[in-house]
Image: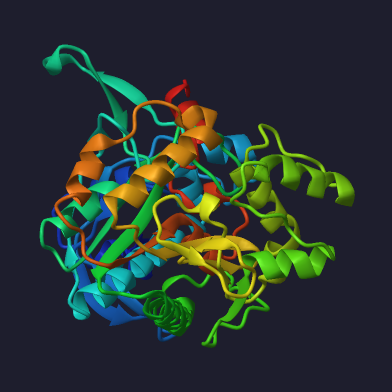
Length: 437
C-alpha cells in the first residue's frame, strides 16, 4: 500500500508493506487502516527512508500509519463552482495549490518591504485602529460604540496617516506601519472595505527622494519575486508586458489632460472652478460623475486621460491642490496653477503608491481642511482640532508614502480581482461563509 503525504509544498511517498510491520497486531491494524483511510486524512507515519525499485525516495513504514484527524468529506480533484469556492475557502485550498501560493507571495511582499525599511533605518510602529474622528483620507468610516466609555461613538480608522504624523511631531525621524484600514464603501474588483496598507514617514525626505525610494523598492521587489516564483508560487503567472526598469516615467497632471483633450483647464483655485470644470466636461461631451465636486471631476479626468497611459510604472505628478489636502502645495511655473507636492504611482492603469511632502503648517492645514469640507458632503463636520494642535508643536518637513498591499499581491499574481488574493475573499465572501449551513 502506498500513501502520498503532502506538507508545506512537499510530497513524500510512504510504503506500507504488511510483512515489514513490526507490531504484533499489525495484520488487524493494517486492514482497519486500509478500510477507513481516505484522501485528506491527517496521518502520522513512523519508518525508515528507502528507495523503490524505480529509484523513488520512500519511507518504509515500520508501524501502521495512525490517523490523527480524519477527513469526513470526499475531496474532489477540482472544484469549479464559484459559490463553493467563495463559501468554503478551505475546500479551495484542499483542491488547488493557488491559494497557498498566494499566501506565500503575500508573505514575501510583506517581508521584503519590512526588511527594506528596517535596513535603511526605519522603525516599525503601530497606531490605534479606533479613533473618535477617522482622518487621513476622504471616506465613509465604520462606526461602533465603546460600552465602557459611556457609549462613546468610535470609528475604525480609514488610514493610519494622522497618528503616524503625530509620532513625527513627537520626535521620530523614520517610521513605518504595515496594517489594516477600513472604509465603509463599495466592494468591486479592486476595492474591499477591509484592506492592507503600508505607510512610511521620513523627516526631511523630498519628493525626488520619495520617487527614488519607490523606484528602488518596486524594482527590487519585482526582482526578488521573479527569482523565487518557480519555487515558491509556481501556479501564479508573472505580470506580462510590464517593464519595471527605473527610472519610471512621469506625467504631470494638468499638462497631460490638456494635451490629451486639446483644451486648457480653467483656474482651479477660483471660486467658480467647479462650474468652469463642468463647462469643460460639456464642451468635450464627457459624462459627469455623481456628486460632481471639484475633486471628483478632476479625478474622473485623470481616469479618462492619464491612467490609460500608465501601462508601465508611471508617476502622475503635480496634482491640483484640491486633490491633496494633506500635502504641501506650490504655484506651478509651467501651468500657473496651484499644485500639490505629490506623486501617485500607477502600473497597468491602477494606483499603487501615493506619496507627498506633508503639509506641516497648522494654518495652511486648517485652510485645506476647510476647503475639503466645502468639497465633500460626507466630509462635513468638525475639523480634527487635535491634529491641528499637534502640528502647532512643530512638525519638521516630512515626506510621506502609502501603498496598498493587496493591489501589489494582485499585480505580482496577475489577478484582476482583489477577492482572488484574499484568503477569505471580500466582505461579501466573509458574510457568505458565516451563513454556510
